[in-house]
Amino acid sequence: MNIDNLFQEGLAEAQKNKLPEAIKKFNQALLLDPNHELSRVNRAIALGKNKQYQEAAQDYAMLINASPFNAQYYGDRAVCFFMLKQHDKAMKDFDKAVSLEPSNPYRYSSRAFIKERLKDYDGAIADYDKAIALDPEDAVAHNNRGMILENMGRMKDAQKSYQEADELNKPQRSAEDQKAIEEAEEIEVKQKNGKIAIAKPQKNKEKKTKAPKPQPKAAEVVIPASEVEQPKTVTLSHLFKTLKEILTNAETRDEFLLFVKSIFTKKKS
Image (cartoon, rainbow, N blue to C red; front, side, top):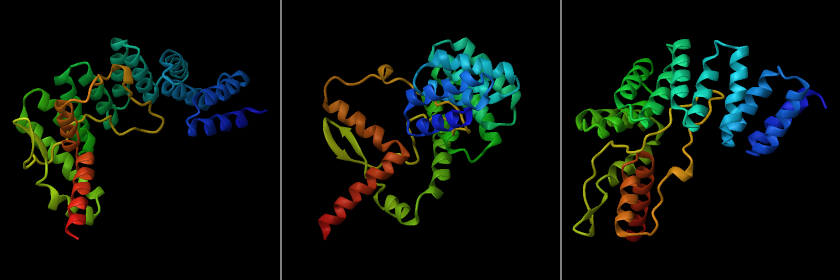
C-alpha cells in the first residue's frame, strides 16, 4: 500500500475518533517516509488527543527541527508540555509562538489560557488585552478576561468584560430565541435561607473560562477528568452550586430559561 493511501486511511480513522487505529496508519506511512510531514502532524494530533503527550511532543520536536519558524508546532508542543506539567518548557514554547506570529491574536489568548491556570493572573490579563486589541470581536477572550478579573476582585471591570462577551454572542441567536430569553430573564434560582427562591439575575455574566478559539490543527487544551473534583453525594448545597453554574453561563442559562418558559407556556394552555 502506498503512503498516500495509508495517510488517507489514517485521516478517516481520526475523523471517526478511532485514535489508536489512526495512529497505527500514520505509523505505517512514516515507516515508508519518515519525512512525510502531514502524517507526522496528524499523528502528533492523534497522540495528543489520546493523552500520549510525551510521544506527541517528540513528533512536534521533529516537526520543529524541519520547520523552525512554524508557530503552530511550538504552540501545540507547548500544550503537550503543559499536560506533562513541564510548565517552564510550555511557557518557553508559547513565548516562541508569540514571537513568530506577533499579530496573531490566537497566540496571545492561548498563552493567556495557560497563564491563568498557572495563577499568573496579571500575565493572563495582559495577553487577553493584546488578543482583544488584535481581535475585538473574540467573545471568548472577553469572557475569559472577565472571569480572571472577577477572581481578582475587580468586579466592575469583570462585569464590563462579561457584557462585551454577551453582546458579541447575541448575533448568534435567532430573533425568536432572543425575545424568549428577554421575556424569561427575570427567572433565576438562588439559595435563600435554605429554601429555593426566585430572584432577578445579574445579567451578562458568564462563569466558565473557555479555551480560546482554535486554529487549524491546533491541539486541544483538555484537563483530565481525574483532576476535576467530583461530589461524593448529591446534597442541597451541591444542587444550588449546579444551578448557579447553569445560570451564570450564557449558553446553558439561555437553554435553561427557554426550557422553564416552555413549561409555563404549557401550563397556561
